Amino acid sequence: MATMPKPIPSHRPVEHGEEGRGGGAFATMPGAPVDGRRQLVVKLSWMSLWMVYLVYPVQDLVRGGHGTAAVVAGSVALAAFVTSYLALVAIRTTKPDEWSGKYGVVAAMLVIAVVTSITLGQAWLTLFTYASVCVAVVLPTPLALRGVAGVTVLALVIALLTHADGDTLFAILLPCFLSGLAMTGLQRLVSTMKELREARATVAHLAASEERLRLARDLHDLLGHSLSLITIKSELAGRFMDQDKQEEARTQVADIEKVARQSLIDVREAVSGFRRPTLAVELAAARTALATSQITLEAAPAVAEGHPALGAEEAGALAWALRESVTNIVRHGAGASRCTVTLDEVWEGDGERFVVLEITDDGRGPGKSGPGNGLSGLGERLQLVGGRLESGAGERGRGFRLRALVPLRTVAAGTADSLPK
Image (cartoon, rainbow, N blue to C red; front, side, top):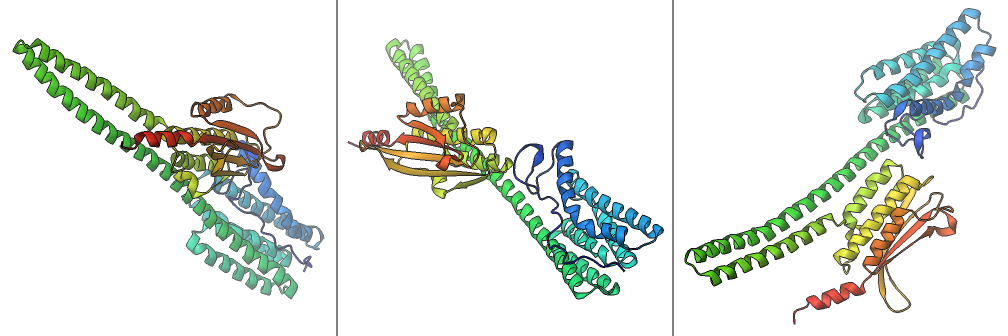
């Protein structure tokens, strides 16, 4: 019987559905589908790196003193095991989880692990670690832990049958159980991330629906009263004309013109408010957009609530700043993994108060390129409300930072004008 090198490193061999961070075809996020053949090849290549732990069965075939038939059979079995393993990765990546053939693939891997361990020796017990990980992947979450425990017990029984020593038992059983356990936790994490993405999308949808309902209520209130008044005055004008009361009819027509003009102004204001973005809606959209690019958004609850003293125009300008910043991070934030959004109030040297929205990321930074059309347009939008835009490298030259400042003095003046006299 071949002597197995020990100890075997207790790393988990692979994490199905676990992907790195980054962009393009070279990295995806946990639970995210693979787009295109290139990403699939890259993922399989990363999965193949974990095959280094199969060095023990390979060494056993080369130096174990087996006959030619045993070496050929072992080589075929090992190739079938690796093929099944990679096929499971590819199939789970390209087909839905409901595909029932995955259970047959895992069962075949377990059979190969059992047969090779019994016939060729304890060096082949390492196959159970891969089988444990695959069992944790294919089984539903409530059954995954039981399945991992079952594979570990099976590995223990086979190890005892092959008369494995204590060190080998420890080096095999511990990675077998811990790898499956880690994969079970990862599957739960992937499920939770999926639910969070769906929840964020739902929040954004509900926010948009609430805005549509607000617009519908505003238009109903505005146009319902105005059109009713126009109808009544039109009827009166018609009666006065029938009675040859021209002056009274002209008065009603003039009133109709005034009501129509005011209604047009009210509708424009209502539509303008509907088109104006809000921090709450833009923050929800930002979470979804950044999550798609594998970027974590960190924002305090105060950002979504906004500043209570901000007017609609100033708050809308900050919302535009958040939208433009997130767009820049998604498009140009190479290497970014985190985006931080803060909302604060500052005092300038002349005693003027400003609300500051700051967005930073940990990407490569702006480099030597100048501001694009998006930032230029954003700066002009902020200037219209008396604010300004500041942008550049983040702290210690890392990442990109954008600060949008809007004054509070306009709000104070508007509030004073609206007070009853």
